[in-house]
Length: 499
Image 1 (cartoon, helix red, strand yellow):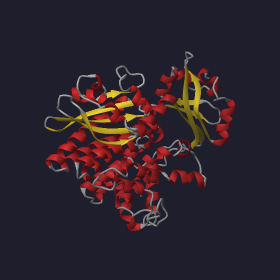
Image 2 (cartoon, one colour):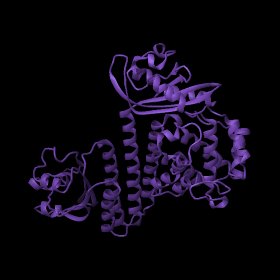
Image 3 (cartoon, one colour):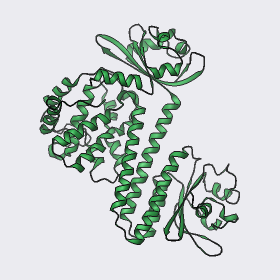
Image 4 (cartoon, helix red, strand yellow):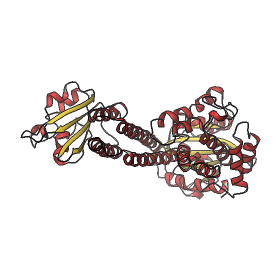
C-alpha cells in the first residue's frame, strides 16, 4: 500500500478534525468527515471557501491577521480556540497548523479537536501509565517477597508511593463474637486512624465502613467522595481530619475460611471510577493469589506469565491512547514494530528476543508525551535547545517502563533506539557492540518508517528515499547487517508496511 493511500485512509478515519488550506489564499482545499460532523457543515459548504468566510471561524482568533502570522511563521497553535457550529452552538477546540510544500504549492495542514477531548486523552494516558507502574511493582513484590508481612507491606507501599493514595492498610478478619478486623500492616498517613475506629466486620455501627462491608459481603467497596457519601457518619470526621477523600476496600482470602481486606484512602474525589476499579480488581486478585502462593509454596512461574500478559495488554492500551493523542503519526509505532518483527526473523533472532523487540518498538516513542506537541510538528530546523528537549524522549520512555518485569530488556531497548553505530547518537553516546542488537534493529526501522510516511510539516519522501538513506549510512550510523536485512525485505521480499 502506498504512503499516499495510507495517509488518505488516516485522513478519512481520524478521530480529530483535519483541514487542508491553500497557504497563499486561505481557501479550504479539503476537510475530513470528523470535522464536518463536529461543525455540522456539509463538504460543499466548506470546500473552496476562505477560512474567515466561514461563520464557524469568523468570530474566532482565526482571522486574516492570524492567517498572515501562519504564512510568516509557517506554524500556528491555539490551545483553546472558541468556535461555533453551523447552528451557533459554541465549542472550544485545540487548533494546530503547519505549512509545508506539496507539489510546488504551500499547504497548511490544520488539526482541530475539542479541548475536552484532548484533556480526556491526556488523563487516560496518565492513568494507564500509572496502572502499568503499579502492576509492574506488584509483580516485583510478589517475586521478591520472603514473608507474608513483607508482601502485605509492599502492596500498601506501592499503592501509596506509586498509586498516589494517602494511606493503605491490610486487616485480617477474626471469627470471634465481636468479629474484629485486626490491622496487620499499614503505610502512609495513618496518624492513629486505625486505633481510634476499632473496625469490625459485624453488621453493626463500626462494621458499616468500606472495610467491614467488603469483608462481610465479599464485594469490593468504593466511596468516591467521603465528604458527600451517605452512611459515613461514624467515621467521616476522622477520615476527613487526616485528608482522606476517597476509599477503596478490596476483600480477599488468604487461606481457607479466612478473610482479609486491603483498604486504600485517597486525598481527592475519584473522577475515573471505571479505570480505577479495573486496577483495584487486579490488585485484589493478585494479593489473594500472592498470599496463597507464599502459604502453599506454589511455584511462581505461572503467576509471572499471567501478570506479564496483563502488562502487555496495558502496553497495547498505551499504544491506542497515543495513536488517538497524535493523529499525524497515528500507527507509526505499530508499523515500526511490524517491520522490527520481520527484520528480527530475517536476522535469526530467537522468538523471545523478537517478542521483546515487538513490545519495545510498540511504545518506543512513549516518552514524547513529555515533549511539547508544537515541537514534534514544527517544520524546518529546530534550535539546539528545542532539539535537546526532543532528545529527552528516549530517557523519559525508559523511566516510565523500567520497572516492567520482562524476559527481555524492554526499557533499555527504548533508551538506546537513538544510539548510533559511530557513537554520535543519544542519550549515552554508545557505539557498535555497546548497543543492544534489538535497539539497532529498532533504529533502522524507525528511520525507514519516518522518512517514507507523511508528516504534518512535509509529504512522504517515499520508501526509495528511506532505503537510500540507510544504505548511505551503512556501517556509519547503522549496523551493516541490519541495513542489509531491511533492504532485502523491501527489495527482494516484497515487504510493505501494513495499512
